[in-house]
Image (cartoon, rainbow, N blue to C red; front, top):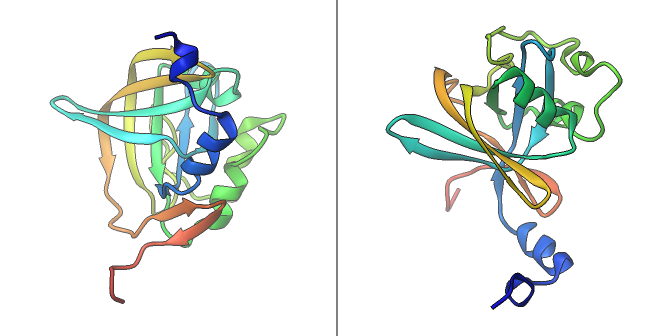
Length: 167
């Protein structure tokens, strides 16, 4: 079988993926390439030995270039009331990427800023794999901030809050 026979229609794939709820995260980075941040939906735990996570970033995006050049990143899982923060970091990057942080009380970390009330995974970039249009960035977790907040989620093109079943 060739890769063409294993593929599905792009629009059908995107429509199906819209039905998969995801926590809303903002990936931040800081270092030689400067401070940057972007809302990212592809984030996952990878391993507990060593503690590692992965994120997927468009290879042609400013955040991907900054993460790779800085060799570090921080995944901020946003609390459920942080829709405006998610929107501020979504979409095209402004001319000055650090401007997205204006007005936020951040906690500086060498890997990237921790956003207010976020559960954060500060990481050193330990591996990168390119697949199609995206870079899979693997990070070894060097510091944690466990905010204990319910996460903001994204489903079917809109933001949602998590509630226990039956409530």
